Image (cartoon, rainbow, N blue to C red; front, side):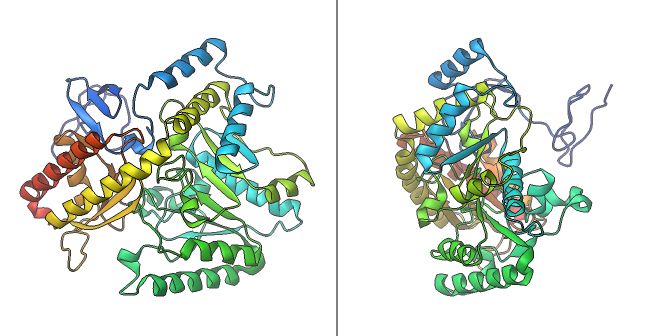
Length: 453
């Protein structure tokens, strides 16, 4: 049997565990159940889920309407392969999702990573159908995360995730990140936007007939912590793509489904990408389901050619996942959760900015709606991230958990940051409690972990 091991912090993993964990020997509480925005462990301790799990549980936990839809569908049928049957559930989901986002076509997948990979393959097929099979070079930002599959990871500027698989990854074309805190170097928004646009144009033009498209997170998530571009950048990026006839792919796995106070984050800048990748909040933690929204131009090219899409995975578009996602969309719309995300997001942002004035460890507050990021620094004036990279993030995450608050670590190996992203169902009173717990967390962090600062 496996033996007990000691973690870097001196903690022991229970002897006999066969489960491979993220960090060998990491001792974490065992989850018991959830109710609304709260999660409980097997010792009876309550945690406010200030990050919706992995920015996923958009409706909170144990929502009765979603559980009812899950149960009713499970009693009918849970799985049917889409190569054998169509299902009413997947048809209804595509119809509802398209109506809510304005896209005419929807391809269903299981996870965000799979959906990113599907978007890449659809784009490559688009070029093949047009007689330009050599177009295979995608551009993406040097600080970004697009999933754990080899295609998505190749496009990711996330040193921590890339490290182990580096030998298998394709080179990707690094665009300057729209990350003003680290890359603007004193430029104002207009000057920084000009720099970003000029560099992107250079990269795209350098690859000429090999350029296939651009992949972008409208608001960066796991690799940097709610990195929000300067106004004008996404519009200019979309313009560059249009001028060159290149598809723009928006990775909205984390930002979509109302998280930022709009159904899609790209709508904040009136940008309509050619493909949009959705995941996480689409199933809201109740079922693994994701999607790619696809424009007319992409599908028309395929329809005029082979008229066949062979992408997909075994569970993609299964009736159970589709029924759950359909119930999630109904809840988002009928409960006004996009508007709630915008309103509660303003409250959360104001509270986080107040915390930043009290805690020197917070270098910047950024984000949109209920996707807010805190950049953590050891020296606010010098903007020093602290050493080693990730240490402040881990310390802040554990300090919050000790206070009964869950936050999401968002460091891609270049900074220290956390995401604060409670469920879209969160109330004003629960936001106040979240801020109170976070305040106590930073007070504890700066007193007990002062060696990191």
